[in-house]
Image (cartoon, rainbow, N blue to C red; front, side, top):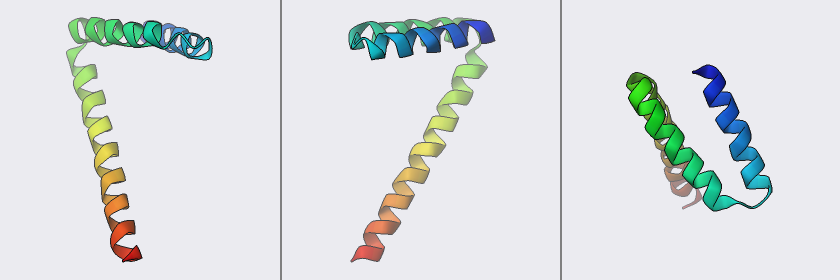
Length: 69
């Protein structure tokens, strides 16, 4: 499964470099769907990590905005 994630990441980078954004998005959706079937805990873990990152960014922006006022 790790090899599949690495291959998908490489294909996504190649698609992005050739400006094939649609193909990169479709590839990402297919990858997430397949990972959700094979390893649902992995997808849930990624979701938690992304949520924590987004929360941290939001908190930092709020703090910077409050400091600027």
